Length: 217
Image 1 (cartoon, one colour):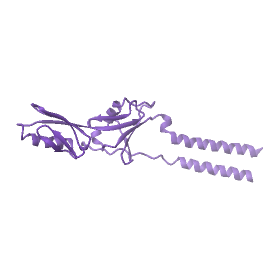
Image 2 (cartoon, rainbow, N blue to C red):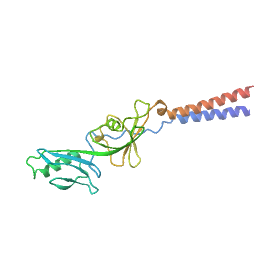
Image 3 (tube, helix red, strand yellow):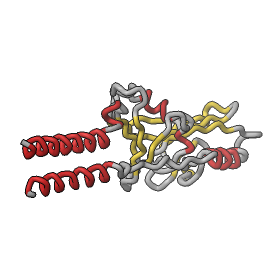
Image 4 (tube, rainbow, N blue to C red):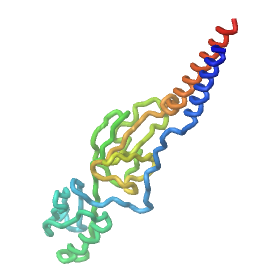
């Protein structure tokens, strides 16, 4: 009787373990994407501008803590919160007062942290028109053995979102303090949770078999 109770207890444990492994692992949601660029200028962003036919007005500026940037002929201009298109419109309006038919070319860039299984983790200055894959290439590419590394956007508040490699950075809500984490996607890495559960079940089954053989003698 004791033997059958022991076997029954172990079988119950096997059943519970099997049920536990059916629960899916935490799924990281896809990073929200916009059909239009969503980056807005903020402190630390870099701006490069050119004024057509006026090379002396070309400049490279950094958005200050006060949200301003300096432009030749204009002085300090409040730019924080502006999109790149809005910035070009603002500068065109202002330069029109100094230059006839002013045509402004403006580009922005931002420092983004990338770390994990990459050859050269660190902070990289990126153009928002670049893709996530382009950022990965700046860091020397992934170092894992998997063909498709898992890319995760880690927000400053701890939230995490899955990133697709072909997505343009400008369509993602990436601000200072955010980072991109690269993780190898080998078979074991992808199935670590399932493999652990399977190992546990196999161990329990072998225990049941051993008890059955022991008490059947």
